[in-house]
Every structure is written in C-alpha cells, then in structure tokens.
Length: 333
Ligand SMILES: [Zn+2]
Image (cartoon, rainbow, N blue to C red; front, side, top):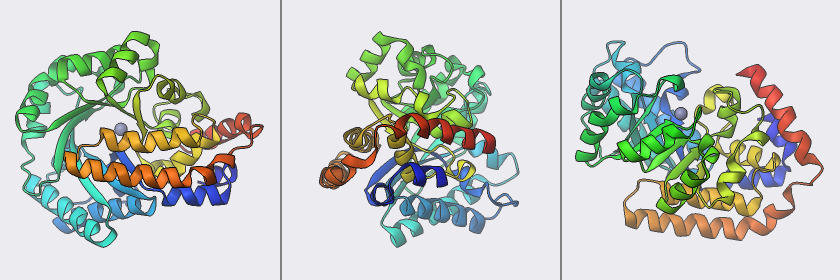
C-alpha cells in the first residue's frame, strides 16, 4: 500500500478510494487468511462474510461478487448449511450496515475431475438469493475444460452465470471456456492478447475479463511487474475488462490500491480507469434494472471526478513506479 501512495498523489489516492467501484474477482477465503484459526461455526462464517464486505466498502467498492470455494471448507468437516447460512448472514448484515452489496460465485476445482466439480456445486443449496454464478480455479497447468462441462451445464440449468480462471498460461483456455463452458466472463485472461482474432471475438461478444495485475505479478508471476501486464492492450482492443484484487489480504492491496497501481504504472490513464470501473458494472451479474441504475451512478461519479484525476501521473514517474512496486510485492508474495 505504501508504494501505491508514494506513486500516486494523496488527493488522487483518496479519490480512487471514494469513487464507486465494482469488484468481480475476489476470493472470500482470503479474508480469513490473517487468522490462525480457520472458520468452523456459523458465527465464524458470519464474521468472515461481514468483514470481507466491510473491507470492500472501505475501498469504495459498492458491489462485490465473491468467489467461495466450498471444497476448502467442506473437506474440514464443515456442514454446507453452516458455511452457507453463516456466510450469507454476514454479507447481508454488512450490506445493511455499509450499503455495499454482495453476491457469491461458487468456485469449483477445475483440476479435480468431473464428479468432484459437480459435487462441489451440488453441495450448495442457496436460500439467500446471493448465489449468482459458478466459476473454477485450481492449478493453472491442470485446466481440464471438458471435465467441467457437466457441472457448468447443471449450473446453467439452475440459472447460474458462468466464469472461469483462464488465460494465464495460454490464450486457448480462454477460447475453450467460452466455447465449451458458455462462460460470459474470464478471470485473469491476460494472455488472450496472444490471439488477436480471439481478442476481437471476445470484445464483440462482450465477454468480461477480471484482470488482477498485482496478483498476476505476485501470485501467478505471469508478469515481472504491474507495468508489464497486458491490460493496456485489452483496453485498446475495446474489451470488457475490469479490475480485481484476487487476494487482497494476502497481497496487502485493496481495489482502490489496485486502481492506483494501474494508474501509476501507466497501464491506464484516468479515462481508462473510468472505463475499467464502468466495465465492472457491465460485466456484473445483478438483474438488468439494478445494473442499469448502478451503471448511471458509477459513470456519473467518475465523469465528475475526471478533471481532478487527470494531472495525476507526471510522465517521468511512469517508468520507475511499476518496477519499484513489483520488487516489493514479489518479495512479500
Ligand atoms: Zn482468482
């Protein structure tokens, strides 16, 4: 966080924190990362949900779609209802207290095989109305798109939307996720730029991409620095790309910091940040009417702030910022 503050003027950092944003790529388990004891009871899960959404709200995030990986909890003997009811109760209470909204995406293990993915999805019976989608992650080298087809079909039949962590090792996994799984969003997806035709198709189809530059440097190490991320190319191609933090507690970077890092690294100018924010709304899975209202709110706030954001990054700093930043994060991550 310190590196972002030093690379971005305080007034700009403050604005980036208060401007309304949407986050579509954040793993809720990350919020428990600071504690030694993994959640067990419904009260633990309530606290996890509550704290996660409060942290979002503190970064100016007005709508968050959290990933929940049921296997990480159920394999410790936690009952699905305890996990789900506790978590959704915490999110609802935080919604009431902060005004920020939350939804949940069940994130299955994309490498564990067909039966495991289906089982992970089927364990979750939603009574809260917060479950909106299915996703998948796990070891990046072991994406088995074909094995996910049954689970993703079942999810679609349940009215759930579809996304997948893909495109960190190659562009083909992005194409497969869209073609075979019917994904409307791709998490990360940064190497889609290797295939110009696919990039154009994804832009035409309005496929959402949730780029997490800091995570791609510090966790998956796809890029050596934030400035090396393909975000600029994706924006120029008119893709529906937005920003996420992936694992904010682990990385020490919330969504406001991530917007600051992208600006400081020269990946986007203030108008580009506005596009990232509005794209987040366009790619979110709220009902149409709520999404339209949120879009107006986000667009108007960013339009009003653009003049204050514009003189933010003196050109000479662009080269130094990302390198200094990535050294810090690589050491930490
Ligand atoms: Zn992720």
